[in-house]
Length: 112
Length: 110
Image (cartoon, rainbow over all chains, first blue to last red; front, side, top):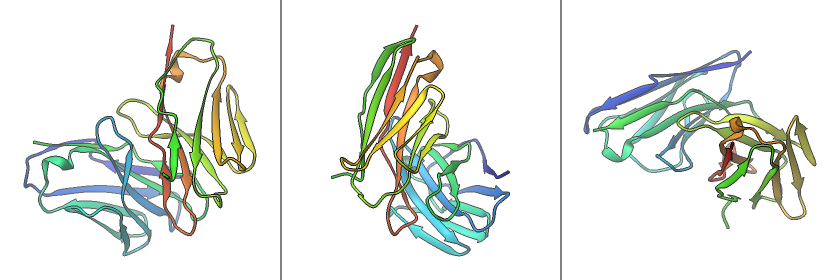
């Protein structure tokens, strides 16, 4: 069966510090990978998605970036965090085609 | 028009009641639809997939109306544990993205 791992679960970082969130998927190959953010009390905002190694599509201009160094690894990064980067970050995967998304447990980031 | 729109709620219902709410979508070519539930401060979890006219899983029934471009979710015999936000998700055509509705909040009271 397929599983998705995302870490850390919670993170408190000062403004201006770097960020690295990692997500890995097991039990499948060539998944589509996604990073979403959810601000408190709001809906899910798609940040990045990837359909293959090294392929990244950005949805929202911001100070975040994503990378996919391996088929089942997706990393979300920032060089300098802003207060507005606080939120609940969710990694997700889906198979090719009309398949549902499967989410990781999420990372709750608080930028202070 | 937004790609996916949902009844925002909140729907506040007593235990045992039936509650139903809709999700409208703009892409007439969409072939698959998904309902997720999200508990407070948790990740969304897949509740139901719909690939044809509808789907039923226990107390939950999803019905698709392609002509009017909406999908509904009905919860029968509501339980306290059904309290959550329900998200409608629709894949976009010619793309790998899935569009999320803003969610419908359901609260079941004792």
